[in-house]
Image: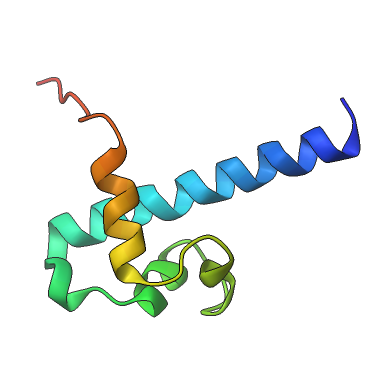
Length: 74
């Protein structure tokens, strides 16, 4: 695997990590209570690093809405 492919894979993983953290925070605290800073803190990113993936909180929510619904097993 080349450097470019590795970087693309790492970026995709970081993108999903952001989304997973945001989904959890939105579910726990509600959309209005969650900030980009809180999402970044949850995944131990600097507050500005999350903006490499998303322009703002609305962009995070739009990305979450595009993902297929997750099934929960009991």
